[in-house]
Length: 260
Ligand code: CIR
Image (cartoon, rainbow, N blue to C red; front, side, top):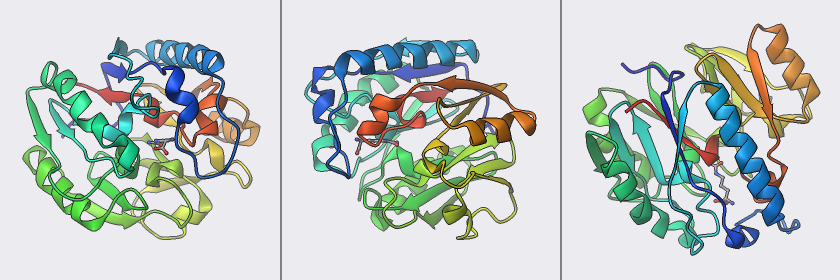
C-alpha cells in the first residue's frame, strides 16, 4: 500500500478576497486577506522545504473556503476521489476540483451519496479512518468506502469529538504507525493499536499538523507541542497559519498531499 507520509506533489489553491467570508463556528473577526496571502506563500515554501513540488490550482473567488482544498478531494496514490463537502456554501468545490484531478491521476472516483469533508479523513499506512461530524454523515462514509475500495485500503468509521469541526482538527499521522492526538480524541480509543503522542493541554489548536516526508509541519506559536515533537526526534518546520485559524482552518486543509 502507498505510504501515508511520503509525498511528491502538493496541490494548493491560493486564497482570494472572498476568504474574509469564510465559514467559522464562532463570531470571530474576519481574516486579513493580505496577511492570509503571505501565510499561504510561507505554507507553500514549507511544503517545498519538505521535498514536494507544489502546484497551484486556479483561485476560486466564488467559494470563500476554496483555499481549504483538502475538503473537496482525497488522493491515495494514483487514485483520486472527489468528495461531497458538507457545508452548502462549499458544495460547488467538488465540481471545481474534478478537472484538476482528472489531469493528474490515473483514476478518479466520486463519493456519490451523503456528505464527506476531507478534514474528516485520516489516512494511515493500514487504513482510512473517517470521522462522523457535523460535515460528514454515515451515508457519505459508506459511499467513501466504495470509492476507496479499488485501493484495497479498509475504511473504518469513527467519531469526531462534539463541537470539533473535523476529525483531523484533533489529530494527525506523524509516523508510519504514530498518531498525534488531543487527549479528548484519544480518549475515544479510536487509535488503539497505534503509538499515540498526546497533545499538551492548552495547545489543542496545534494538533492539525502534517507529516510530509522527513518533516512535521506545525503551526507557529505552540512551544510545548514543538518541544514535545523535537524531543521525540521529529524534524519540525513551523508555519504561521493565524489567518486560516480565524476561519477554522489549519495546515492539513490547505493542500492535497499526493504521490500520483
Ligand atoms: C470551513 O468551515 O469549512 C472552513 N472555514 C474551514 C475548513 C477547514 N478544513 C479542514 O480542516 N480540513
